Amino acid sequence: MEVLRNAFKPKFLVSKKFMSTFKNVLEEIVVAEVQDRLKHLSEPAREGINISEVAAFSLNRLPVLYASTNRGWLQQHDRAKNELQNQILSAVRQGLLGVMRDPLRKQTRVIPSYSETPAHVLVRLQKLFRNPSLRWQEVPLVFMQALNSNAYMSEYVGLSISDRGRVRDVKGYLLRKGSSWQKSRVANNIVEVPNPVLESYMLSASNMATNVLENLANKEVKTQLNRMANILPRRVEIDDACAYVLNRLPAMYATTKQGAIWQTQKVEQGLSSQVESIAIQSLMTLAKTPRRFADPLPFIKFEQECDLAIQELRHTFKRADITWRNIASLAEHAIYHEKRGMTYWRQQWRMLGQIYSEMYLNPGEAELSIFPSPDGEVLIIRAHTKEAFGRVADNPKMLGITTLRHFPSVSEISLYTFFLNFPINYTRQEMFADGII
Image (tube, rainbow, N blue to C red; front, top):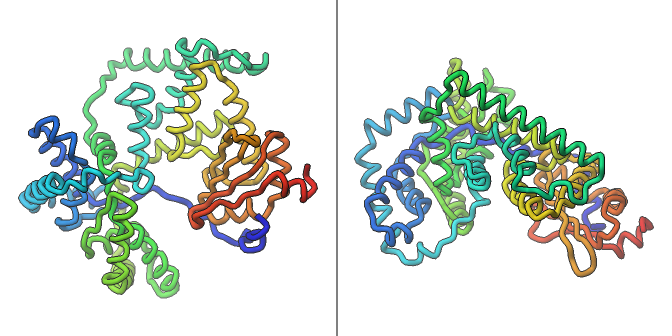
């Protein structure tokens, strides 16, 4: 870890990962059409077809209709239905034929981490908790109910007296809260009704295709906005500018990492100057056009629910590294062990949360986990921002002291980040040489 101690000082700006607030309306429409077409095929034929592959094939042969506001979404949706219906049907038919005729496409493995969204994670949680109507706002309650339900009778094994009391208190609270919530719904005759916006939001989980131009357009808009900030007559919303740029470029969807790299290379070779010029044009145009009050995309409310749910889960488990990206895996891990009476995961989570806090890491900017190894336990840290990486890499002794206080048998700490294809390791021997053992 010594190699990078001086290379990454805490001068980095936090690079927060915001959920998308602009979207191509045609994604939802194309996926729905593909699913409808698949209903008319035999079961063996359906099993050989990947919806994301067909959607990407189709979307790359259609115009793009991006929107960044609720009003824009409705307008683009009407345009798609009224003007592009025949093109959509034709593109989907071509997509199905293209995928079925190409045997190599059947072997193409979609990489979820490349284009995964909160909707995809919510689908995983719905399956885990056997609740197909689960919403993000209900996840914390349902998760705790699963941990403390009668199905997991070994909940008190290995817990201290104070922890047992805490579990009983939480369980009683959840039972009261769940009961009152159900009684309220019955008393007020609340019936689940179809929610087209929610259905549209969840439909996106069927599609793992992503337009590689979205990230490129976003980066270019931000770059030009920084350069032109002093000459623009009024503020321009980044999402509006991105939608403007993307609506003037061809669709370049990919479903795999390899496909995304290939599409990105095509952009760099033939469209980079065009992306730049359109980004400048978008800022110049939008800066002269007053932005009328408009609601954000209708899906934003579900992503806000997601954000609130994650905050509640962080508070409940005292782990600031919980994010929408890792909550499904963490929940699966917790329930698996709780069901088998292996409750040490609770103490482990608390200690990981304490290490995270003592390293002064911001919520969600890194992820901690610990695994057994032949030589002892290994602490894995995945930094999601350059600032988090710099803070950890710059303070190996502090990290070692903190880690050994909570996990004395740790033999190695491995630091991973998105801009390096190898980990930075801090071994027990190095800890000894630094005088912390």
